[in-house]
Image 1 (cartoon, rainbow, N blue to C red):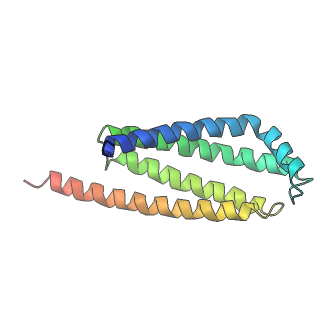
Image 2 (image 1 turned 90 degrees about the vertical axis):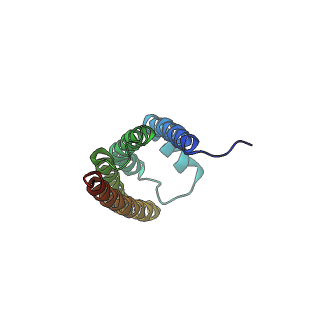
Image 3 (image 1 turned 60 degrees about the horizontal axis):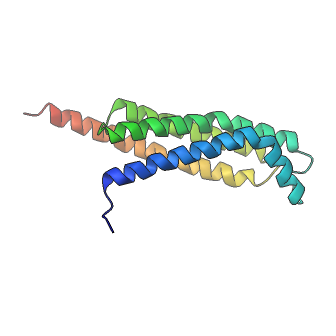
Length: 151
């Protein structure tokens, strides 16, 4: 078996982003049908709240779309060996704020369907992780700039 290389890892990440984007588009297009099907097969708390459920999904769609776009840009930059750049730091900042936006929508949506609390917690935690990574990138960029000016 061939060894795992950084370029293969980047390619895998890019393929996963494309697959997630396709899944995202399927959810956005099929949301009303998916919600209807979910409620039909489960005796859940969401029954009678179909419109709220669909609204929650669509309110999350914009930030999730932005996350996917910024991930695509981030991986494009990394594949070009542009790592500790202002553009990447900006992408990470956007991704973290969009995670927090989804968490906020999910937290409010927990009023009618308690499972949204799980999504809110996961997205808030993801936003926090991305913020930490962004801070590491910022510090690494500062160190890189200092080293570039050192003779």
